[in-house]
Image 1: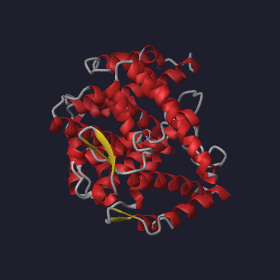
Image 2: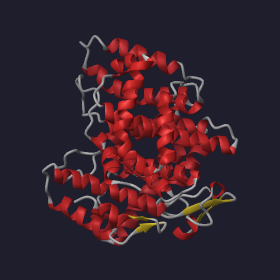
Image 3: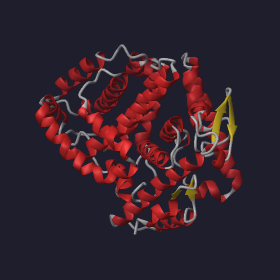
Image 4: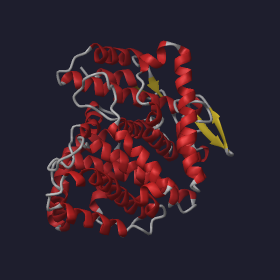
Length: 411
């Protein structure tokens, strides 16, 4: 079962600074980089599937879990600089000692997700090979997201003797993965539709949530999307979701706020104040997403990627927060009982919108709760915590996971 400590651990990346020995135009946070990495990994996953259903299902799971495992590992080792970590990793005995210590720290928080998940996590770090496709995709995505950050700071640090070597290292290591379909297009950024799309996603790290409310830490839209994705995956495991349902929930969480690139983060009280305003905002979001995202990908020769993204965003049913299946190419809305019953199977390509909404609210709750614990008390934060507790006091998912009980752990 999900515990408070795991939710807070995932959120901890919002405190973890990156490139903190360099002059930076803005603060760069670990959770934002992980979000950008997993958006990139999803794109590479879409373009490097074999077409064999069970193999692609396994690849999707391995990419998601590998990304989560690497993030958890990073949260524990915190500020070890990459060159030092790579030196440790090059020495098998030293790396094993470090990994054993990391797993000791993670075990009490991760074990509640089940023995199978825990064993996959342990096995992931017992294998040093990077030859499998999932690890290649994750490594390429990691390098791409890190290089994207590097390009932000290199012009501000002309005196830094490390920069030239860092830049060469990024280029050389990315070249090792040029065989992955789509990577060359991503690296070219402005010259390709894939690169421009990933650039758009990266810009969401500059867009702050709760922009009118002081908070510690501040969180970006991009980082929030990754946190929701992780929560969605964990809750899916906890309620016995099928493999495809777990994957779809993760990726839907990873992209659920993509329209805010076009509208900014409009707070819930504004959306709810007058029904026509909420409907107008939703209509505008849909129009702009189709024009600036879907058309970009379609015109660039990637209609399948645009279609998949549309499924995650719920464009055919009007919202990302409804339960859907894909039956014979037709997207249908179903109820929660059906989704976790007769349609809880990979062949229906299911997606749990209600669960996604719960995770979105959980992430908002932890943002407000953490800010208050850090001494920032405002009416907006207090109201958010009270409202979310009230809204979910009697809510359960699939009749298995009681959301109110989970929130009650936060005293």
